Image 1 (tube, rainbow, N blue to C red):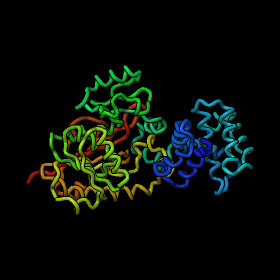
Image 2: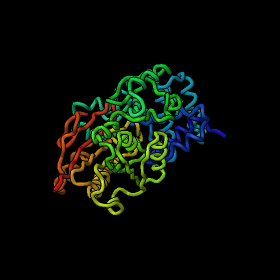
Image 3: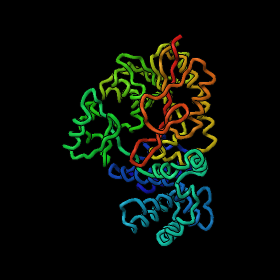
Length: 427
């Protein structure tokens, strides 16, 4: 038996507000609603989270007194309903009545007048309520992150905030070993799918479609991968037969790209479940990739030293460069989390460097826009590791930093990834 989609969405948002990772709880919630309602569920959940700090600032004004902790789901319901009013095609009366009906579905029938009154006031006084928001609320960014970005990217702050509020572009990486970009674009056009160029071997769809509708998807002609993520393979640019280690590889987009470019790829990841995705993607693309289930910090204990021509370290990070794809980061991430990520990034770099051959290159990557996780990590490593030299990236991909380059995310462009290239000189 299926459950009402708005009630499922509100409960899911409340779980995220209490600290749950969206990736870990979304699939189960999605299965509880009718198949036909699943796109609407995704729209409500992801859209509400992208604008969560903004709507939370509005609820602060709408509620005469704070909700009790046990009734926090009502705040999630309000935020979701305001998002639906502003961004969805539902008629306003249906959005309001749908939210009011949720009160009983969520076991709080007493709140129907409260929710109805708040939403009516929002419709009536929206301009005034929005005008009263603080700077970080208006930007739809958590306060700690808005403060950091204001200092690090004062000129790009509006662009960063805008990108984080948008639906992410749906970009494809064409397997140019199988078909040219132009020929694949012609297949899309024939299928009635409009696209625009994205990088050297990518196309961004004007309107997303299910992967089943992509010509040749099951035949391995194409993969879904953000334009910035496609840069990893191009920057390492492996020669045919080179052995490349992809650390923290799941779900395998970059590993598969490296294999398409001719590398012999070993993909390592701490998550056995997510490694299955690497195998599935490689199989669809008819690629051979060896998977290793291991914590990257102990890979140097499992693999022979100096055994790889190149290494891609796509380090776990704050995900501040991919907020539109992981919007729960706006809700669950704290400034104090950054120290934990930087400690992990340092350990990973120290471990996998031992596995690089003299003359080899390591590409350090994150999906963060925070200096602490990017240049600061690379700079500290270069100071402590005398066999490591900083290299200039072979192409311009974003804004130059001291040791690498940072892609600044934009509404229509790629995600906010950072790349730095290090070389281990031959003796």
